Image (cartoon, rainbow, N blue to C red; front, side, top):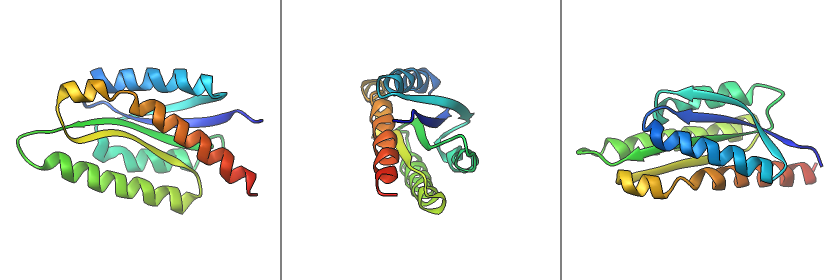
Length: 139
């Protein structure tokens, strides 16, 4: 079976958390006989859709994962960021016929909860690989 080539879009905001997420994602990709071949760092989760689109346009990318941690603040800003970014990310998967997996934790979580949820990165890799392979089976 062909090794799945994954592009990753990683938020720099809360980098202490997202860096751990990226390392876990790389490790889990190897376990699943996949590889993260390209990483694009963006300022924050809200900035992800454009980078996701860029990766989806590349023939050498089979699937994309998004890695970010949106921590609750004093306002509802975290809710807005995640809702808009996740919706656009899902739309891009449909527009480009390639899997895009959501590895974004939040909203409404504390920094401690964000650290406890770094495994969302592994879930994103797993979802991207499964979707890619299952979609290829049907072709």
